[in-house]
Image (cartoon, rainbow over the protein chains, first blue to last red):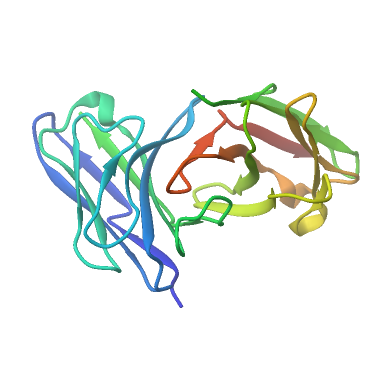
Length: 114
Length: 113
């Protein structure tokens, strides 16, 4: 099992450009999450998907959209990138989404917006 | 809103010395508590978690944590650290529908020889 995979690993964008971050898991998990990590702020939840076909906003959703393409894949889209979106983005998944379940994280995507 | 405070941004320690990384949370309801570790340029990996029962929780790599409800703390400890423990450690709490995690700011543990 590959676990949680993310593509690309690194990306440089110019302000105003768009891009989609891809995430896939092969653990048959129902719930998936997108976080961003910034120095001194830990990880903050952008969006999550409790199950296939549902998505909900997290703490910092502005400037992002998501798509739960199927049970395996959960993508994050930046429609018009801004320098404030320079960050490391992590995707995570968990089996059902019950409180206390372990979340499994991907290796991250490092995004630089110039 | 719930929050997690990690009291130290960096903790330098010599190899084979004990270490404690501090974590406090704010909540008036039952919580589920986690410690995750992030090695350089990698994703997060679960160290241990507290769901219920014994307040002393043992995790991987010799780490343990103690849940203290009265002090709303969940400090992480290791009696003897190794160079390979150098990493960033995150405390997190889960107490909402959907198992959403709220993370602390992280503590960088630097183990020196």
